[in-house]
Length: 119
Length: 119
DNA sequence: AGGCTATTTCGATGATTGTGGAAACAGGCA
DNA sequence: TGCCTGTTTCCACAATCATCGAAATAGCCT
Image (cartoon, chains in turn blue, brown, red, orange):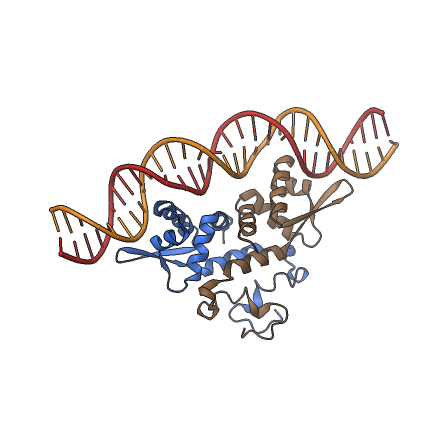
């Protein structure tokens, strides 16, 4: 993940309305939620919410799919995982054993293909 | 973790210089790095870096400790874990089995006391 | 005390961002 | 076609933020 991608993600989540929107959308995985419903539940005008959803979309945190007249937004949880891994990727100067178990949950032991908790 | 705490963390990381600074400090765990050294390595004036480090500190992402004339900054990786857990805490409306394995690395299986990968 | 180094605080400037009214666009239905 | 609903784009204003020169603070040394 590029540095600028991570900044887009953090910028997207660094705003109260957007953070609420993302968490609301995430709470509705895997069904998703239409844009207007997000605006209504958070009591924000539709056009304001629309621009916030656009920021979340550009950051890769949600995806939009048209369904008749509504546009359904769904969370991209892989993106969260990517950015978390990015943050701790070169922790401790490449000697991860130094900062275990702080990063234990982010890196090898739970990723697909790992064989044990012993990383 | 409060909603506002998460926003402070994301705001702190949503800026190129601060993200670089945090990752640099994290790369020097557990020894830490003096403020001037962070500024010098990232080629940023000391006072500019000082205000950025203040933001990171207020967000709880780093801690400062005076050591003679220098002020040593260290990363608070627990804070990263906290905010990651916060993000996925009510994923899928409290039915986490619906979005496994997306959140597998964040939650139970690798936390202290867990007994297996089978969460 | 005086001088030196490391760091922070103050203050001002230019740039970016959140917000929401108004208008435009897209799709369904009569 | 015309009308309605859901959503986005355009635009402008107020507020917040990043940057950095200058001054202030903190600590060590002679």
